[in-house]
Each structure stands twice: as structure tokens, then as C-alpha cells.
Image (cartoon, rainbow, N blue to C red; front, side, top):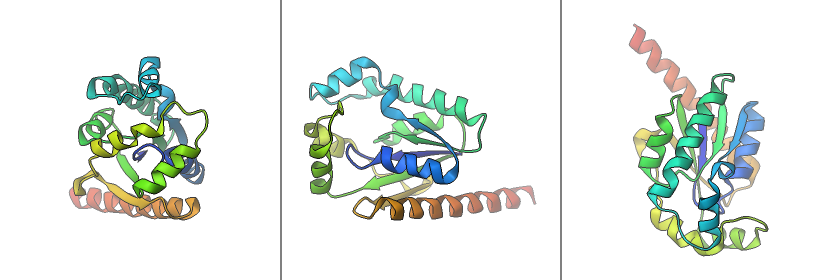
Amino acid sequence: MIVVVMGVCGCGKTTIGRMLAARLDAAFIEGDELHPAGNKEKMAAGVPLNDEDREPWLDAIAVQAAQVSSGVPCVVVSCSALKRVYRDRLRNGGGDLKLVHLTGSRSLLETRMSERRGHFMPAGLLDSQLATLEVPEADEAAVNLDIAEQPDAIVGRALAFLKFSASSNSNKQKETQS
């Protein structure tokens, strides 16, 4: 299983992703580390990425997730995955993809971004990310979680979703085999 902790900048993807990976005894992939240098430079300059900028980055994430998942039962990835087509690109890498979508108010996101130090993504790009975001649809095996809650509570809700999702998949497989 590959779990993508997704959402706009400042929502806590890395924090929740690391905590979730620890609770699942899973591998963790920090999606920001796989951005090409040109993408980081563009964002640091306050220029939003476009679809062409994101394609090689998403492909790199999908490849690394597939490679890592071949040796472990679960991989957690932090990745904005803002559009359905981006998430579909990640799905093409293989594996059972689950989405943990972190959501929050614009004011909370802006506060968090303004408090970050040493990150290439400036707070000024929040509006472009919110405009780009396509909330996961019902058929995407996703849960939407509010970042106003404490991180432990968010991780607990994510774990409950993943457990339910895994049991639902197991039941579907049994029905198909019958």
C-alpha cells in the first residue's frame, strides 16, 4: 500500500506523513526532496509550478514509491498531489494508493507558512495552490482531515481510515473470488 499525505503548502504533510509512517512501521518518502532544482528555484522566486514542471517530479515520486514498496508492505509519501491528473500519475506507478488529504482554513495555512523557516516555498504561493487544488473525489480512496486538530488526532483518524479501507479491499477481493 502507498499512502500519499496530500494538500496545499503549509498543511503539515511532512509532519503527519512522518508520524503516520512511524505508526505504520512504514517507509517514508519526502516528496519535496525529489523536486528538481529548477522547480525549487522557481517556487523560491514566487513563481507557481505548472503541469509541465510537476510531471517529472510526480514521475520521480511514483518510481521511488514503487521501488521502496517492493520491499515493504507500506510506504507513506508526502506530496501535494493537488490535481486528479497528478494523483492518477502517481497511481500509474503501481500499488494500492490511498490518500490522506489535509485541509484547513486559509488563515491557518497562511499562519503556518509565515512561521516556517528555511523552506523554499514562500507564503505567497498559497493562493495559487488553493486555486489549483482539486479535492479528491469519492472514487479515489481518500479521507479529508482538518489540520486544526492536533497531529496525534489527525494521525489517529488517518489510521482508522486506512484500517477501514484495507478491510473493505479485503472484503471486495473475497467477493470477487467467490
